[in-house]
Amino acid sequence: MFRTLLRSMTAVLLTAAAALTLAPGAEAHPASPTVRATDPSTAGSFPVAYTDLTVSAAGRSYSARVWYPGTTAGANAPVAAGAHPGLAFGHGFFQAITQYESLLKHYASWGVITVAPKSQGGLFPSHSAFADDLNAALTWLTTQNTTSGSRFADRVDTGKLALSGHSMGGGAALVAAGRNPAVKSVTTLAAAETNPSAVAASATLGIPVQYVGGSADSIAGVAANQQKMYDAKPSHTQLRVITGGFHCGFEDSSGIGCDSGTVTRAVQLKLTYGVTTSWLLHTLGADTSLYDQVWGSAAQNLPGVVYSAKP
Image (cartoon, one colour):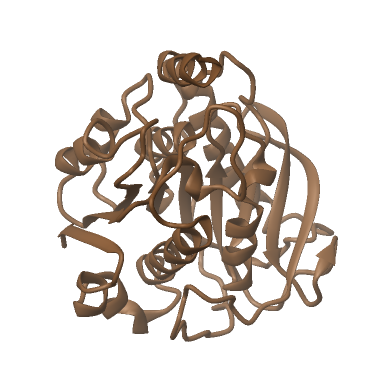
């Protein structure tokens, strides 16, 4: 019964408020080391480092963890040489960012600097404020790139910025993208409708957007959420549905109120790593060899994932 009530609360609380426009400028940077993602579902070649800090930018301030490609693995290691793409990732409703550690470490291993805000984690989150927090993360990265003494100085490719998120965070990522012309690509996991509307935001986006869902998701199901977003989005978009995938299967573990599917978490996460990493690297121009894994026969015939696209 408690699980049912919590799901009901999740659905009700997937509503909040809206506002902020960011437009960080892009500038030329040396390219990051070329990595050919022959199998983006496996770990990349970079050691994975992280740091915990306070993001302060664009009038926002919050705690966050940043996962990034390092010279060595572990806390506060130097950033690997070159300029790397930047990503802001939004957590789901009432979920800690540690629930997504394996995914965010995976992106870092492929050379993506990923900022995960810890904000809007309570029972009454503002989706609009969360969208602003995600954009502030990208603004912060852009500023850090030119800040003398920063760990990230000259290490961010500010022309390759993206947004992502799970559930509420996925919806907020779409809202954020509609407010930020610096964003070049979006990928979402079980994106849930938000207030302001993620469906309406999808209709305004001209950049590439990927919607990933699970066919067994009983919390933010495909038909009521990602399908509507995909249908609203003009071209340069795709909907990838993991057969038997479930809402909490995009996380490292399940808590109270979570659902289940017909595939294992390990299988779902591996498929998620592959389809989202190839999307980010390809659409951000970090790896031009990945067309087939994003739009071609390899994508269309990937076992366990139903493919719909408007290239």
